[in-house]
Length: 242
Image (tube, rainbow, N blue to C red; front, side, top):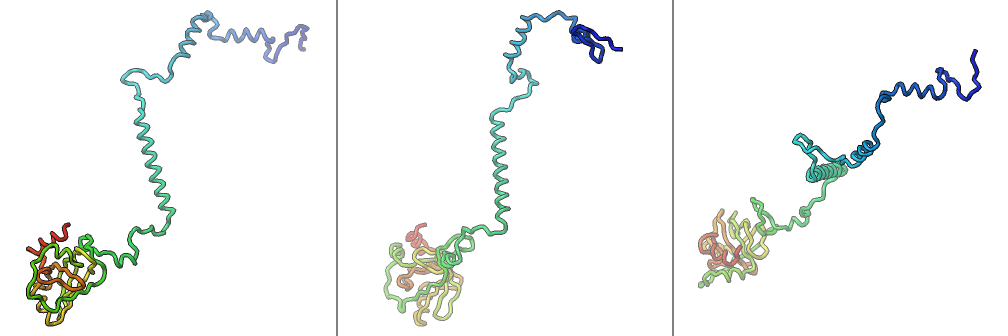
């Protein structure tokens, strides 16, 4: 039978009177119960040391881990930017699907009249199509000596290779245009009586390379048109310096 007490204390289910016996039990379990109380001045000094210590400081020894400098982070940021840019380009290419990219080259219409290029890829200044010239019906008995000013004043001047001589027609393939509009192919026509004189005066031969000048659609003879060598080549170089 439980005994009732008339005072303010009571016994809990563990048999302890609240609260003195419980405090006494806790004190017996405290491992520091036999230690003397800490000196208040020492406690204050220790607290001050803790609060003033730089937590970011590193030991000044050879084994200390080196801190990453500002350059390291800049390089890392740059690398991340490059990677992000490459990823953006890849996504853009995927989004474009199979649609063809816009071409920066000339359209079909413009390329039809654009200057053509030789086998080496250099533009020779010739236009698409054929230029037709004629030879004078007669060769003057007396001719002025070829000169750079006279040739430079011609409406057309070019270098070409003879590809065919048929009857009263000489066909040349243009390799370089010095002045005027000259087609990729040039055809020189002359009456039968004058053709032989033209061939003899310019020494046209299939496969030969020639310098030709013309005005009003008529080839200049008397030494102003001929093989691309020797003195005539030098005169053309003076007339049309590169």
